[in-house]
Image 1 (cartoon, rainbow, N blue to C red):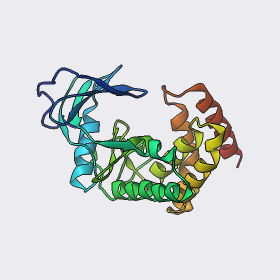
Image 2: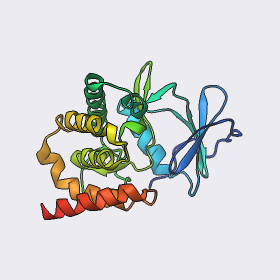
Image 3: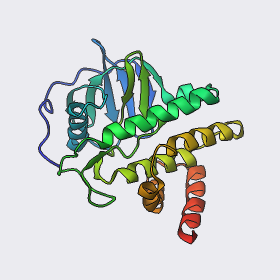
Length: 233
């Protein structure tokens, strides 16, 4: 990646109350409307900060990065729920509306020209890719939706980002009663994109998701079945 953006050596405040725990990092409350994101097994990649700064300049709603050092990053605190939390209690009309919101966010991200320093795991292309842009990584605030967790950001063809988001959502663990809601969301989300631009990346997206070291076994089983179907098809 390129040189670290300004702020990399700023003082990191002491962590406060634990607000949330993800697969790779924990988030703690800080004073003055800020949070501390702490990775458990690696340092902050300067490329993540670079991608967020690039996205913000391109008009994508992302939390402000105040500083980062080692495994810790100080970010703007966003007040709201994840899109996933809202989906879990939403009826079909709202599910389709939120699918449209996610599609809009993808399009806004992909209109941004990515820094050449970012990796291109799906081949060459100029678009900024989030590569983890699904409902758990969207915060719905009073001021609109924000995109969080840019650790996988890259550059490349926009269709690959859409394909990977669909694969993540399709393979996620959900209770049986949520299967219909998931189909509704996926159908509405993918309807916004040209299949000819996303389908060529489906198998590569499945392979990338399978390689995720944080993957749970039930997800892996589903993905392996999807991979087999994709390769045969």
